[in-house]
Image (cartoon, rainbow, N blue to C red; front, side, top):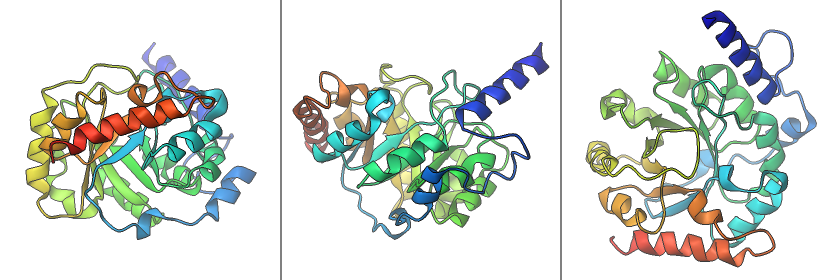
Length: 276
């Protein structure tokens, strides 16, 4: 049963990520017009100056998937700083979302910064494809493979900013020896896989310890999970500066009523900035 489970999981991931038959390890070649177009896009991430101010990164996992381009344009117009994208493989986390073809398709609609959080195991075979799709930052999970430093080197080799995500039970020790190789540490404040979960308050101390650990290094601290106007000041005071919010941004709004998105984004930002 175990071998069948893994085989089905691998086939599902190949379908979701738009892979064709052949050697999956040679995922580098650009295979669709959207990917080819995005490959020529300006790589903003590598040249972006470091800034520790509060950034709101709406997760499009909570957006209308039938209208992603317009949703991205709406939240950017309403004050989003980054666009957070969550590819999931149905194996590392219990959900199956989007692959590099979708990332390439939405890339032309993103004028800010595309932050791609890979909830995929293994991640290494897909880094090239997500890079060519137009990611500015690629974040891999410390738990997703045995050679985290090698994964980060792969991201860097693509000219992208590199982040490391830590699940709630993964200690900060996993990144202490690679701090000079990363641009961001993502601390999960929920169990990854689905939006709309409640914030885990025990992670506030982890954020504070992470902030002390990085010192004056130019490393962003991102938090993801249950972030809203109530929890934003808690993580901001602890040292987080990039706040991923899905349900709290998209709740009550739409492309036809984008002002609600703006109200939600401002509420989260104002709450976070109130403690700084």
